[in-house]
Length: 131
Image 1 (tube, one colour):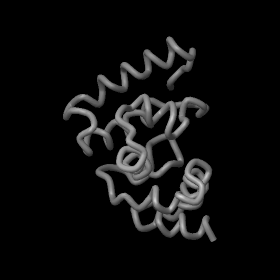
Image 2 (spheres, helix red, strand yellow):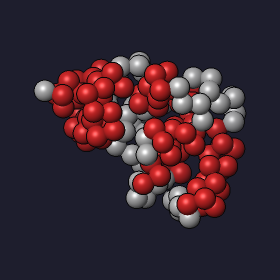
Image 3 (spheres, helix red, strand yellow):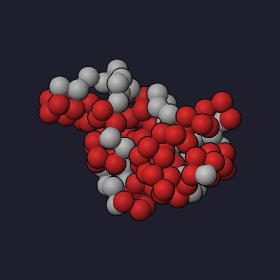
Image 4 (cartoon, one colour):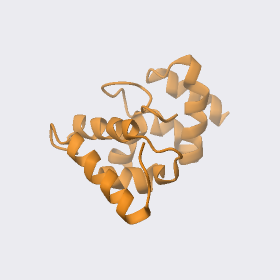
């Protein structure tokens, strides 16, 4: 029942049918029973799915609005636990940063610099390579 509700919520925010099930599973894995709510924060500018990831872009907005995330690093390292993604893609980080920029968390035009800072920090702190 939770997977079906989450898939329906994914459809409502524009997730394409061919990736909807994977998006629902990834969202349930992170948010459990709150998965449908994590998708219910409204449409975001750009792709419905974060590039290089099965996660819907609306989960970034949920992390900002409901979990008080205030930085790209917080979302990547703690909220979405993408630090453990193999591989972690620069395009995924850019997609997250674009949502943060659109929602006013990052200043307009600041996404690319924030991604570059995070890539350097992940390499230094965790020896994490970003593709």
